[in-house]
Image (cartoon, rainbow, N blue to C red; front, side, top):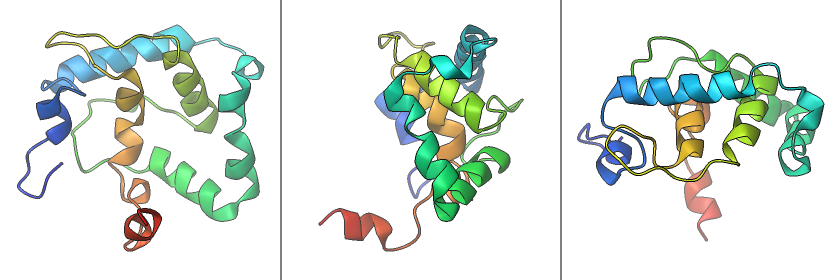
Length: 134
């Protein structure tokens, strides 16, 4: 979201402009990962568990990103239940190619992370973005 309220992700084509299209895409991702054994995650995705479990700040922020409600969009339902579900969704979209039309999510990972990035916990504290850009 830009400072003037424009949803730049929708404008750039990363996410569909209509919320119902985004939520339909998310529902499809959730349906694809339901019932998956969490032990079958790719090693690269499963590796995210370590900092979530071992670093109290990272763990707190990830849990809060899932628990909080995003200010950037109004969702009709919560699509990410918990950390294991988030990891399963991330793992599940790695098999998907970008889609190109007005109703699809061009970058499926963006759809999965949209909720978490739109929460207060999903925003970096002041100064972190500037310090990591050096």
